[in-house]
Amino acid sequence: MKATENNRQTSVVAPEPASTRGSNPSQQVLSDFHTVRAQTRALAANLSAEDQMVQACPEASPVKWHQAHTTWFFETFVLREFLADYKPFHADFHWLFNSYYTTLGQTIPAKKLRSSFSRPALAEILTYREYVESAIDKLLCVGAEEEAIRRIVLGLNHEQQHQELAYTDIKYAFFTNPLHPTYREGPLRKTTETTALTFQAFEGGLAEIGFALDTKNPLDFCFDNETPRHQVYLEPYQLATRLITCGEYLDFMSDNSYSRTELWLSEAWEKLEAEGWRAPLYWQPDATDTTGYKVFTLRGWVGLSQLLDAPVCHVSLFEADAYARWRGFRLPSEAEWEYATPFAPKVGNLLESGRLHPTVSPPSTGVQQLIGDCWEWTCSSYVGYPGYKPLPGALGEYNGKFMSSQMVLRGGSCVTPASHMRATYRNFFHPATRWQFSGIRLAK
Image 1 (cartoon, helix red, strand yellow):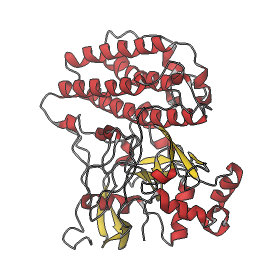
Image 2 (cartoon, rainbow, N blue to C red):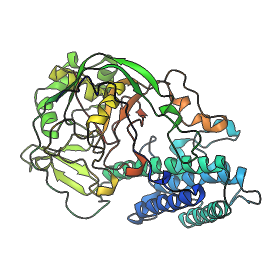
Image 3 (cartoon, rainbow, N blue to C red):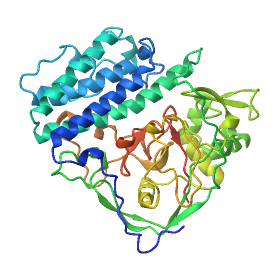
């Protein structure tokens, strides 16, 4: 299918957040607050106290820390500033659970040491969460000012980010555990045959991308790095109608591609040689499966033969780029990706599906899987849009300070909360990152 001249100028419109409906902002955000906090409790319910202490690599964090830090965010940026009689839960928590906000002026513990925080105990962290929740209830029940509501909405989106990080972190922790425990019981549904890989043409031209924030509505939300909305010029291009599957990636591996220097960027080849990569993260040799591999999932080990038609995930940008070169294509830019969203379904395999793993593309025409399943690597460096301004004060450190040596991913994954996702969302990671649910879409 081809984008027509009439819809070529169509703006990318982000889905309306559920919380924007209604006339009482305090009551709406109070409902959202309890929903998001309950989702974190549900995430941790399958984990023991010992599970929640594990930090399997320096880039990950323990689930206990995720719960403490997201609570710290509300205490630091909302309650300390907007609730006059608020008494902090514990004086040391203000620096202990700070992640990277250096402008707050205190020493921040090294990230790699978070698993050493055996104290405070998990029970005290859960009490801390309840204490802060009660204070937020109090603030909202009496009617919070607009800036406080904006901060709470930011805090909710911040917690949803950490929910997704917690799923990826616990998956890696269970993978590195010699017992390979499962996070959720029950078999992973076997994938059925996917649709053929085709391309949809877009005429391009002058387009707009980015979020058009309604500054008069305290419930309207995007991260600062999604703004300002601005014009871009796109040459005509084509976008693959679905993600690359495990079976297609296995063909790439079978062509000795991890040993072919001509397919890899220089830094990619150095990383591949240093780490010994020969397959995506979580793939291991298994002589009992017809493919010769098994895959670790949040439901335990699964033979690759059951996943051949599902999207390949946990690949780095380096691997995605090499695969695209092998096929004679390239990765899309983030502007090309966002421009395609009006022509694709707005629903996808997100956290609420309960699958916790990418699944096959539905039998349909047009571009599929733009939302959910896997974060999609783009060829775009993570930089500020023209006219970008970070939030004032310490909150300006949230996104802007990381605009170096990172690449943009789009679309969300199977562990992204549905209310957290929108067409303009810009995720970003170093190109060697593999522990996120990251996959491949081709462009030409």
